[in-house]
Length: 301
Ligand SMILES: [Fe+2]
Ligand SMILES: [Fe+2]
Image 1: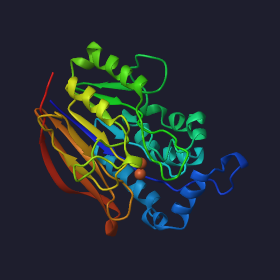
Image 2: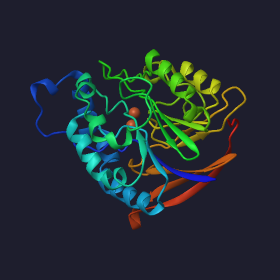
Image 3: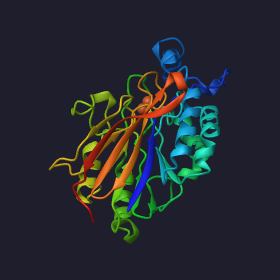
């Protein structure tokens, strides 16, 4: 049986409000705004809306069985950014089941988390099985596959600190989810924003790492989860399962960043997973397939 997923991430749509309230100001947002507005980032994402519209058209044409959004739809964690992103993605939100997890630019400051704005605007992709109250983690059960979603983003105080964390509570609930009959009888994939490893195979640096990445990896390996889908890093890469880890790592990169703009179409064809990279082609304003890779998967329930 085959099943296809569209995995995309890091749209970074620059729609923060023109006027900020007094309570919107803090050092991290100011530094983020300078970075987005005046330094290199504004140019990298100046076509983000156009490319997102092309992405929506492409995914609608490809008709996947489900969609995985790995976070960073926003830049500074304002509700206005989520509203705009959700309105652009509305045709997909209303047509396909899916999972959406926030990135560090979505849960940018404490207010972004408290407002629940990301969760409200992407509620259609946050419906699934829970073992406890609360949004994360959750599991979406498809015919021949389970999509697990965990929040790895957390607001931080200082601009240079972009560490993420899943936390002991989510790890415990993930374990409970993995024990549910509907989940343990199917192959599982996990979606987060943060990666386990960088493209070169090394762990993230101290202030960029997922602080409990090893505990999460150990849990996934123990329960024979087949792949960890993520974003955060804007250049896409794949790490094959190895003997110790047992699961694949799939970074879909940024869907909208100039020249690396792409997303993954994952075709589940047991016992392997075919990863097709579809990249934006500026002259014709469309996404086209640029590579294909077959990944042998180690464990099946
Ligand atoms: Fe990002
Ligand atoms: Fe990120």
